[in-house]
View 1: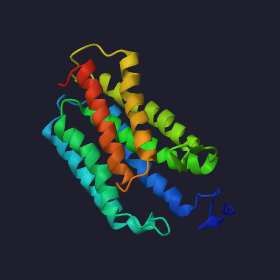
View 2 (view 1 turned 90 degrees about the horizontal axis):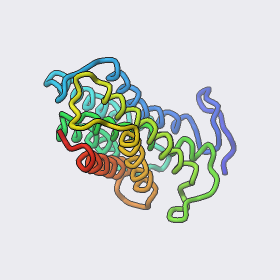
View 3 (view 1 turned 180 degrees about the vertical axis):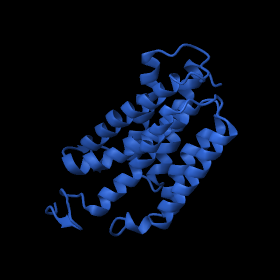
View 4 (view 1 turned 30 degrees about the vertical axis):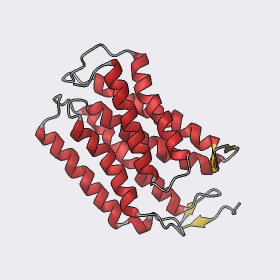
Length: 224
């Protein structure tokens, strides 16, 4: 275990240096931007204008991170930055493209990626603790943070869309259904993130969360 260090004026804990903190911020920030949607009632399905805003914002943010990726690259990181950036952006944008009348599905995927995956590394490195039996490089603290924080934020994102006066829901949405639509994708995402794989975790988490929430929506409420 390395000793705590101070880099560019930032006090860090073991395993968390300035690069990793910056990496976590860039991972979580798209989810924070999505909160702004709560304050803007929108048509359902979303209008071409809003759709264009989503696409342009997603592409611009992805390009920005791709170009400046070296600022958040871990030491010795040999992963493909295209997979990391495109996996994140395409997971969310593809849900918007496929389900324009069910924008809550894209918001759930975004919340799982931003807050679930984003908090797993942060909490895992801060708290550490017992390791997962199927992957000794991952901890239970990170796994549980993924589920609890990701599931909570995904549920809030889903709930916020049910409060949109112009949203179309085929059936009344109960609190239990909202929690299932938030926490189950987070649980599946946490598991897929924790397994050993050569596939970038943004791709694995985004795809698994999207399929999960899509199936839940189809089975319980129907797809608009």
